[in-house]
Image: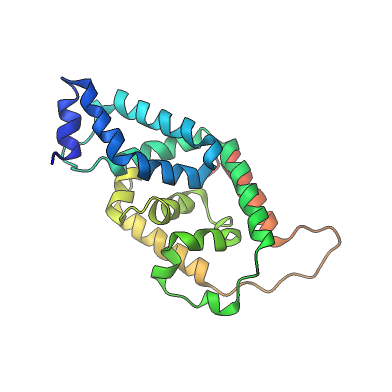
Length: 208
């Protein structure tokens, strides 16, 4: 079976060969994008991602046998242009969190591997909303994109050491005991809601 770099190289002489890249990675990219913006905006982001990949395939690092990290990096950039769709998805997740049961105290005492599990993202959304945009990108690519440290580094064009340190910092923040609730003030928004609203503003306006 040909590696992705072989297919991309051959696509310069036979453009139709690039369809194999689409077929190999459409499920992974679609799944990741759907978790970020929801199913309604997924198709537009995915289509744009693969169109950009085809147009810019001349920039692909031919030393890399898998194109998935490259495609995820493109998808991440495209997602940055669909900030309002992401904000809407955040609000939907916020509503889901509000309707779910509170996280039990024992749930905070879990291993790093468990914190990396994709299912924990939804459960820990109030805390994730308080992370910086850069940290969230790394976490989402690891948990939702199922990328390795090396692949995340390639996707975001950052050193692998930076990926490791960010994920370590994220695990610490997500595993820490919840802070004591502040005194109740009439009409004051819940801390989780405030965090998510701040994250929405970051997403819409593109702040890191």
